[in-house]
Length: 67
Image (cartoon, rainbow, N blue to C red; front, side):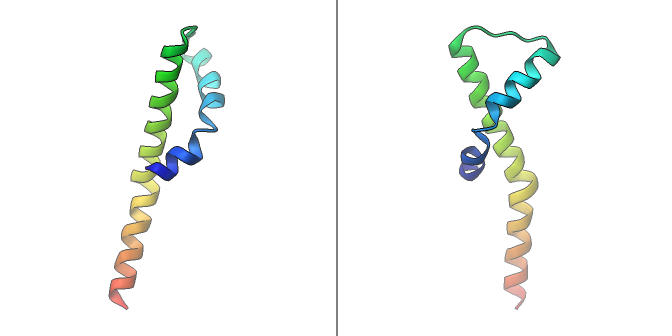
């Protein structure tokens, strides 16, 4: 998950400001913004790990164990 956090943290502000008007959210509190920013980053990194990185790692481990 740490690699995903590193990669995705740069894109979250853009994603956040693009998504919030579509859902009708408007947050002026910097602490709530920080919490939302952190949660979105962590969620995206976790989904990436679960759907991309973990299957690739499993496939790679099976492939190298067979040879």
